[in-house]
Length: 104
Image (spheres, rainbow, N blue to C red):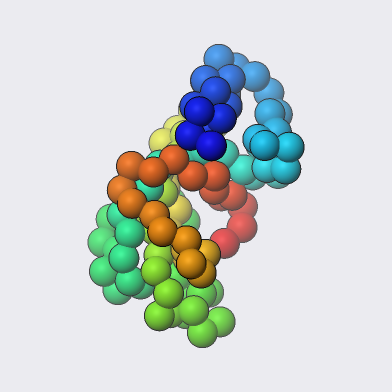
């Protein structure tokens, strides 16, 4: 997967419009490749982010789950999002991941 992520990232940086990652994550639908910069509980994530999904996740009863802050490049700007980590998924700082900046 890491090689696929890097190839897709190179295509985005080269100016390709609207790639679809792994046949299901469309750039035009908000998906992009990012890198994990923090992993922790809802209260332990400290860095600023462009979008924070913690309030909605806590309201849905997911406050005890792990969260990750993911940095990504979109439309000529660097941004980040704090989102809930899927159950059972293990993430570490520096891991490449797909992230949808339009949805939590």
